[in-house]
Length: 312
Picture: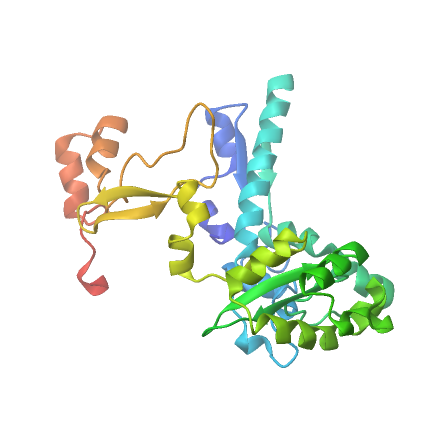
């Protein structure tokens, strides 16, 4: 998220790096690209979401943007797409022996994920508004359950799932109303269906509602808090949390990598790293700096294992 000028100030650019290695691959990921009016603007996730129009899609009809929260969707998009672009450049280098300079503007990178909303504007001259928990075509929502702040998410995509949903609820009379007979009619009467669904879920435990609907072939899941996730039997069975120790924090369970591998399981090999814990190894063993120069860097405050007084 550095501004474009930051790398220029450091004297690090593609021509300079190319002199050091002719076939080097360089990726730059400024917020708004290296050209154009916004090239020197600073941005974090919340700003990128606003610029591309994502912020105004989140929330409920009675909310304005001030009640929104950032989701940092550009971070995930930029990281994965940047890695893909580098792999493509490395593939090209393997075939041709030539490196490449890659520029990935993070705002532009996230915009294609909103393609249908831009199409709606260009084709229908219509700006989309907040969508809440709704789906463009399916019946979908987050419905209250028994207990304080307990909810279940439900999605009903087509006629077959609607029939399955109705059977799971015991075929209530309202579900056979002609105005709910097809997907379009159901979506047009979404508010009324939400009311009926809520009357059922309010009598149910969130996990019970999930199991009943899942057994009928309907996608449903509870809205869990951190304790729910931490104590969830499914995640425990899959060893999602692994024990690790750290000198300052003690021993706790931490989430492992979000994937598994058959030959090289991604287990946690060490606890959370403390500030500056590997300074000495990196500066002396990896970079080859002398003890005296390392001490000088410490004295000047460039490296440390302690936070500055103003941060305590």
